[in-house]
Image (cartoon, rainbow, N blue to C red; front, side):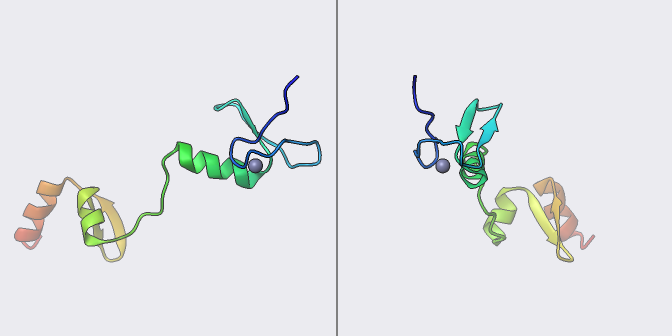
Length: 83
Ligand SMILES: [Zn+2]
Protein backbone atom coordinates (compact mmCIF):
# COMPACT_ATOMS: atom_id res chain seq x y z
CA UNK A 1 0.00 0.00 0.00
CA UNK A 2 1.31 3.42 -0.92
CA UNK A 3 0.15 6.85 0.12
CA UNK A 4 -1.13 8.95 -2.74
CA UNK A 5 1.01 12.07 -2.97
CA UNK A 6 -0.09 15.28 -4.66
CA UNK A 7 2.48 15.80 -7.44
CA UNK A 8 2.30 19.58 -7.07
CA UNK A 9 2.73 20.17 -3.33
CA UNK A 10 3.90 16.66 -2.31
CA UNK A 11 1.28 16.44 0.47
CA UNK A 12 -0.24 13.06 1.29
CA UNK A 13 -3.82 13.04 0.06
CA UNK A 14 -6.57 12.52 2.63
CA UNK A 15 -10.32 12.04 2.28
CA UNK A 16 -10.96 15.52 3.73
CA UNK A 17 -9.32 17.20 0.75
CA UNK A 18 -11.12 18.46 -2.36
CA UNK A 19 -9.37 15.86 -4.51
CA UNK A 20 -9.04 16.34 -8.26
CA UNK A 21 -8.26 13.50 -10.66
CA UNK A 22 -6.74 13.94 -14.10
CA UNK A 23 -7.63 11.10 -16.48
CA UNK A 24 -5.06 12.49 -18.90
CA UNK A 25 -2.20 12.46 -16.38
CA UNK A 26 -3.69 9.63 -14.25
CA UNK A 27 -2.76 11.70 -11.19
CA UNK A 28 -4.62 12.74 -8.06
CA UNK A 29 -4.25 16.25 -6.71
CA UNK A 30 -5.00 17.49 -3.19
CA UNK A 31 -6.98 20.50 -4.47
CA UNK A 32 -8.22 22.20 -7.64
CA UNK A 33 -5.46 24.82 -7.15
CA UNK A 34 -2.72 22.17 -7.20
CA UNK A 35 -4.36 20.53 -10.23
CA UNK A 36 -4.57 23.80 -12.17
CA UNK A 37 -0.96 24.65 -11.32
CA UNK A 38 0.18 21.33 -12.84
CA UNK A 39 -2.14 21.67 -15.85
CA UNK A 40 -0.74 25.12 -16.64
CA UNK A 41 2.77 23.67 -16.38
CA UNK A 42 1.95 20.68 -18.61
CA UNK A 43 0.44 22.97 -21.24
CA UNK A 44 3.49 25.27 -20.96
CA UNK A 45 1.10 28.09 -20.29
CA UNK A 46 2.26 31.56 -19.34
CA UNK A 47 0.92 35.10 -19.40
CA UNK A 48 1.46 36.71 -22.79
CA UNK A 49 2.95 40.16 -22.69
CA UNK A 50 1.81 42.41 -25.58
CA UNK A 51 5.21 43.81 -26.43
CA UNK A 52 5.99 44.73 -30.04
CA UNK A 53 8.61 41.98 -30.14
CA UNK A 54 6.24 39.29 -28.78
CA UNK A 55 3.45 40.32 -31.13
CA UNK A 56 5.76 40.19 -34.15
CA UNK A 57 7.45 36.85 -33.34
CA UNK A 58 4.09 35.14 -32.75
CA UNK A 59 2.79 36.38 -36.11
CA UNK A 60 0.16 38.56 -34.53
CA UNK A 61 -0.96 42.08 -35.23
CA UNK A 62 -2.97 44.57 -33.24
CA UNK A 63 -5.55 46.62 -35.12
CA UNK A 64 -8.00 48.84 -33.26
CA UNK A 65 -7.17 47.07 -30.01
CA UNK A 66 -7.99 43.61 -31.38
CA UNK A 67 -5.51 40.80 -31.79
CA UNK A 68 -5.16 39.18 -35.22
CA UNK A 69 -3.19 36.24 -36.53
CA UNK A 70 -1.27 37.26 -39.64
CA UNK A 71 1.16 35.94 -42.18
CA UNK A 72 3.94 38.37 -41.41
CA UNK A 73 5.07 39.08 -44.99
CA UNK A 74 1.52 39.71 -46.18
CA UNK A 75 0.96 42.03 -43.25
CA UNK A 76 4.17 44.02 -43.83
CA UNK A 77 3.24 44.43 -47.51
CA UNK A 78 -0.27 45.53 -46.59
CA UNK A 79 1.18 48.12 -44.23
CA UNK A 80 3.59 49.41 -46.91
CA UNK A 81 0.70 49.87 -49.32
CA UNK A 82 -1.21 51.70 -46.61
CA UNK A 83 -3.98 49.04 -47.03
ZN1 LIG B 1 -1.31 19.63 -3.58
